[in-house]
Amino acid sequence: MLCLKCETKPEWINSVLPEINSVIIDHAHCEKKAAGTGLSLLSSYPEKPEISLAMADLVEEEISHYRDVVKILLNKGIKLEKDKGDPYVKELMSHLRTHEPKRLLDRLIAASIIEARSCERLKILAEHLSDPDLKYFYRKLSESEAGHYMTFIKLAKLYFEEDEVKQRLDELTEIEKNIVIKLPNSPTMHG
Image 1 (spheres, rainbow, N blue to C red):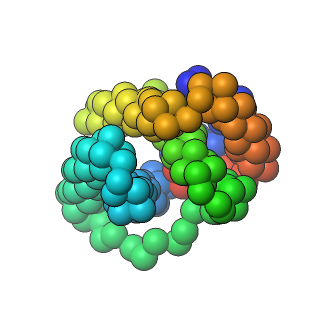
Image 2 (cartoon, rainbow, N blue to C red; image 1 turned 90 degrees about the vertical axis):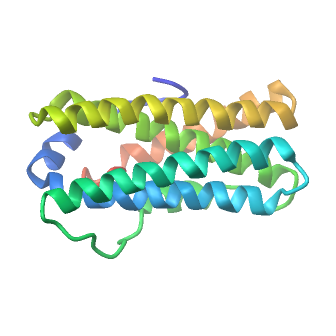
Image 3 (cartoon, helix red, strand yellow; image 1 turned 45 degrees about the horizontal axis):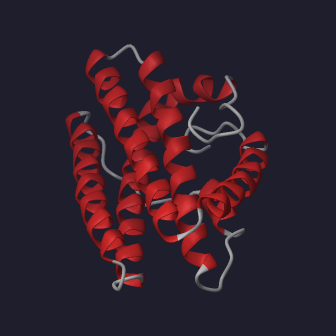
């Protein structure tokens, strides 16, 4: 379960399957925003070459995922709709500290948690979809998200003491657990 302190409620998949096209649209936006997170981090910390290089790789991969998800939508005859936002991510991000260097630690850990939750959700999707192509696609993406989770944790441990990383990860995963418990099981990636 990576760093997560709770599993997604089983009811989530029941709300997702009948609305899979809406979930795929939301997923496209999630990939776009993940690339945006990478760009923001490499722009915010240009003096940290490890972040610059890791985020350049992440941005490239996330944009590739975005492109793949948009192609799935086009093949289904579905247009990408306007992004409706992600209350889960907004709530988690509202708990980040605002002063450096703690802000960097929190941004890296929050990104790792979001990637871990995405990994879990993509795996659940892959296990429940009947379309073999979508099943395979989401299984592969869940593996990729697990790698992104590790990238952010490794970067955090590069710039901060391991005990500090573990303590803040524990604090933010507790906050994330409380957010997830209250989610309405909407047909979105983090609903």
